[in-house]
Image (cartoon, rainbow, N blue to C red):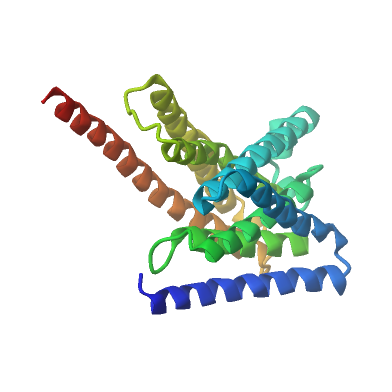
Length: 277
């Protein structure tokens, strides 16, 4: 990417990030929504984690991936804890009722969503700062921007928090995405090793079980309950816009995963052929 195009990309996404930060600070200071301090706390926590990891490893991509792995692990654990706790309290029929998902907030759901929102803001900044993205319209930056918009608007209005917590179960798959990247940066690329095969197995299983299926089910639930949303309200359009974006990104991610899987297998076969020669 040439300098001019890169500059325009950075200007747009950095500007949107600064506007987002100004909006959050306005809500905290003037609207007295002090619970949004969890968003700021999340950003500081992951930025501090970045700085600590950087003492041991200077490569910006390795540091960024390590922090992303930390976020995926913590978020997955918190979401599973929230869902399991609610499942024991109200059962599946009660916890997935429309009013529960839209109007109510499960214990710790607001804090978990806010903390994760802080991570996406940190990660957007880190990727822009070290230019850890590719393409004229980088999908990862678009992904973070969409999430920041949807998450913060929901947090401001304190609606659909539980729906968004359900979408974060996809972070279970992200663990293996980040593990794969760390593994490759560590030089472990033998496609026939048990470790790599097991990692790919978990990658594909969680892609379908924890990412694709939940987002499709959430889409179906939103469409089914569309008539239950307040007419003229922002909740339904916002939810449909956000989940549609996630589903599109999932399709792109699935294609990229398949290409990476084939590429690793092809590379292994090529190396084996050269070795025999």
